[in-house]
Image (tube, rainbow, N blue to C red):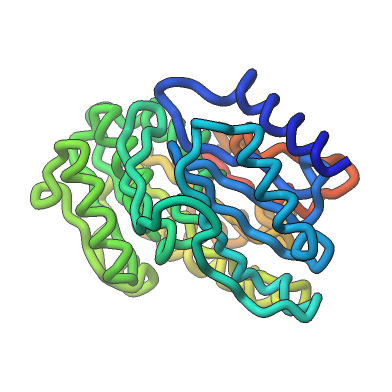
Length: 317
């Protein structure tokens, strides 16, 4: 039943994923938790839910009641952010609004002891890219004494992890003024200097073409270039061009973390695209490691569409 599956999802997170140093995570991951059409993210004492199908929409009150019964005194606020394109296929209109508790726009959370101010109303997705946690941790591990460029930096996640790992200097670039303002807020929240470590509002493609790119580590984490199957050709071209722009100027011996959150660009195609970019840039690459979704984004083996995220840590020479 839906209630049993909600209970199992909460039990799994409590027993495996939830830690005092991390109080933000994916609580229910749709088909992965056997509840198709429902996503619930937890930010400290706040839940943000996404409803993507008519069936789940019809039992919204039951789901809300079950969540409140199970989490009891742990939750003070529930916000619905059902604005995905999937709703259109079921004839549902986008919905945003509070379902329970005191209304608020931002929630302060911890992820691996790093502080984030999460804008649940205006932020992308439900407020924070929770699926990238493993990759952020990787950057922390390898950043000591390094100079780092974080492209498509959004609210500064990779930058904060790099600095907490001892990076010498970090530059963050995003086209959105709201995103860079959020990054500045998060820098200040963690006591990091956002003047020394530049936060730049600019189009990443333009920045890559004009900057010298003399960094030890470059992170490319663009938005999904392929949201439907017909986008594959243009998306592949986009991934090739952006990686080529970085690879053509990166110093020998530097590292590239390149990511794709496009389900229709699978791992094999992503690697072929990266190889094409390297060939055109005249560079040779070594794949150091491969990474995917954070562990709280559980996947149903019969529903591979949720296995959309992939990244490669590359040595460039």
